[in-house]
Image 1 (cartoon, rainbow, N blue to C red):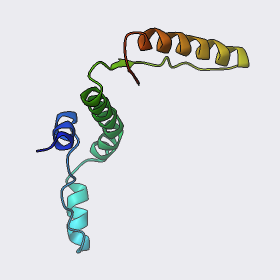
Image 2: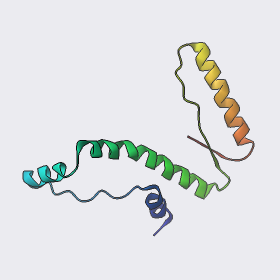
Image 3: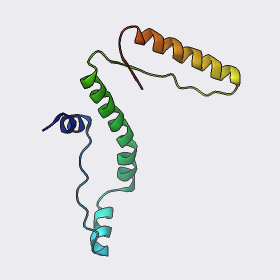
Image 4: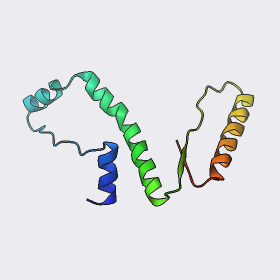
Length: 104
């Protein structure tokens, strides 16, 4: 197992099982085997898993790296944008003084 496989495994990213779609009945049976919300949850979870894998890979190649969460907020004016940019810049510069930064 190489580093990429290890990261995929630890972050919960797995290969999709082969789907037998040659026959309509097989496809219907497979789709009915999982409730609709399972499909949606699987799609929604994937981005988080990819983010985790990206962070793990960054830490592997840059062991001193640290994750920094960018503030999320609703911006309604140019003033709001400037305040947000200032906050992000301050947080990134502060973190960067301690080592490489992974933006989350």
